[in-house]
Length: 395
Ligand SMILES: Cc1ncc(COP(=O)(O)O)c(C=O)c1O
Image (cartoon, rainbow, N blue to C red; front, side, top):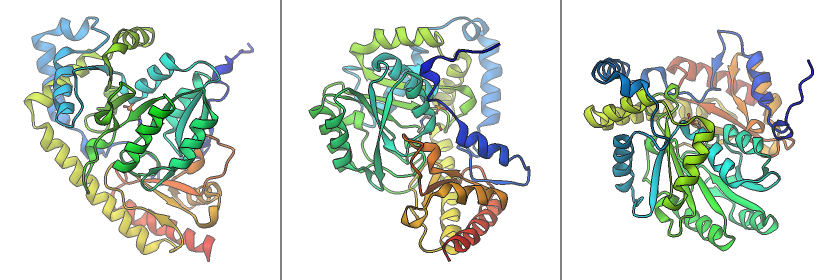
């Protein structure tokens, strides 16, 4: 049969990554390509114990339909935690959602008409970009700098796209660059959003995983007029398979977001919400986060050190203060795609910047490396191989 795919899906393709992953089928491949938590990062025994207990104590509550806004005790626990980070709940509401990915989907569903603009950091998280594309959004990229978006390019984008509905940003340890937006820039971006009267979607799945430097206040904590929708996730601190995250937004939007969620999945997985609640309130959640931070700090330092030792000095990269990623940039705007492809033939998988581009036609000199999933030996060996390749390419 011939399938007539809807126009709105026309711009959505995972082709860059898919092509590379077919090249990457070799089990001996050293993969710096994933965005997964480390396999030693899961509180497996605790999850098993809580699951057995809650299913024994109250099985029907775990298996019955639940509320779209989420399990109230978990919502309250998250509110308390976020209040300590400066996000008030006098005028805000918090819903449980099925991952940060769903927050992006609900945001686009609620606010973007076909053909309207969403301004995004360039490069940015491809899962979100594809979600916005699936609603027919026009994506306008604003170059990312080490301390956040280029402000004059952002202002220009806002000026020339009066149909912009929101700015999408990942302020902490951005995927893919690992960059963190400074407080100064957060304030400036918020002021621009006010001046041009657009919303901000603040996507923060990595903020809890800060292992160096000082925490920077969220945009949501600076929000005085209900302009920021904030989203966080359990994927990197509990288990991505739970598909659980949360959204904070102006309470005036509560019914709208509930209606939008009912159109998608009615509510998020109840058993997993109970597990997260029990783990946060009855176990050592803070200790677990501290262990993750220590693990990722060590792996990031190992990767930075190996890159510094082996990479050609003209390749630029930052030392991240949290999260899971480092992005390296070839000099003189050289396209990183063929570099990545050759790295794969030498046994090391990274992800080329073009996979994260608002405009995939534009070449990107960046390639993303993940430090959470490879072993220490793989980090050392993979950086050595890539380093040799940088010297072969750059002389
Ligand atoms: C920036 C960003 N936002 C959202 C997500 C999606 O996370 P979740 O598993 O919570 O849907 C990811 C996942 O890697 C991400 O990097």
